[in-house]
Image 1 (tube, rainbow, N blue to C red):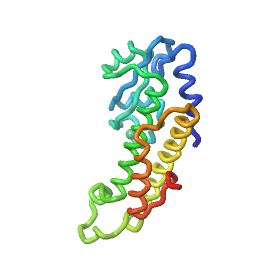
Image 2: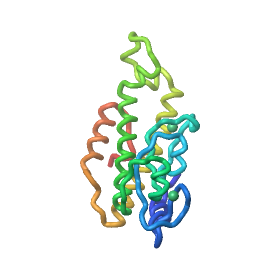
Image 3: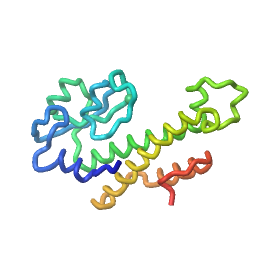
Image 4: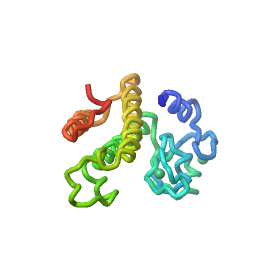
Length: 181
Ligand SMILES: [Zn+2]
Ligand SMILES: [Zn+2]
């Protein structure tokens, strides 16, 4: 899946700003975080979830100020670069979570026998490993598309060293990543 951030951002910020919740054109839009399951619909990011109705994952929401009040959202005004930075940071956070999972969180998640502690996830549960790989690839694609947006708009990529750190961590764990050279 290719994400076209130019289109997404243009739709939100073109001439007048449009709210992802009520669709109304407004002079200011705000961005904030919500754990409400319904909030997934007001997010510019894709959230892949098997339990959408009860999902309490943190979601980045972009709405007008009156919708933000309805949702009791603690939100801030953003411009295109500010919003893209928030999206980039969320994408990074989720990529870090993926590596934490591959490193050892899966052992707790799947409640594995301490005797199997030295095994790798792909050997213990190939299906979970495949699903994890799919969502990691999707996040990596998102990351690269965000990176392209910053480049093509001549915006500085915040904390550019993050990418190298992630690549090194992936390699150390023995998993390849699209973010490497
Ligand atoms: Zn609205
Ligand atoms: Zn979810």
